[in-house]
Length: 112
Length: 112
Image (cartoon, rainbow over all chains, first blue to last red; front, side):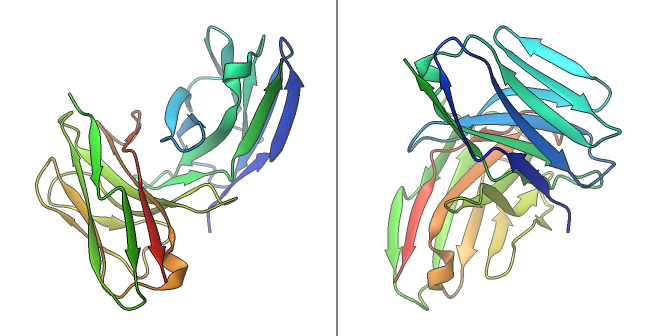
């Protein structure tokens, strides 16, 4: 079936460094790619999303890039802060319906 | 404006028992979703409702049924609970299929 793979599963960086999380998807017609942040015991919350007609999107310290040809997209966090520590999920909407497939998540730890 | 609400917060069931998880949103969203979240597996879509009066299967629908009671409410029913259904269940809603999904606080279900 259609799936989304996410790497790495864990990532530890020093405060102020950059963090990059990568996802690949299998449905070539997927057209919407959100990223969610989930703190321990909390609900997932959208941090940024990108649609298939755009190659890159930025929001302050967060950016997402999309390569439709290669079927992969990445989350970039610059100048990381301890409060960025959380689990991050990528997702891709399948082309023919509202079905959303999520990656398995990346646990990001930012060390002060 | 409460956003997405879910009841109950926590439930313990015995194998074979039934229960209904309730979800409501006050954002006038068209689409609603039910996910389950298991450790190390991210979020998996159980069922979704693109609009009032319609429901469709997601990635893992077996053992579940849903009802879109009206535009605000979307319930998930387990007819005969199994230990494999032990999980955290999240409801979400969105304006449309390529719009931000807003998640509820989750229901933690333990099936013994």
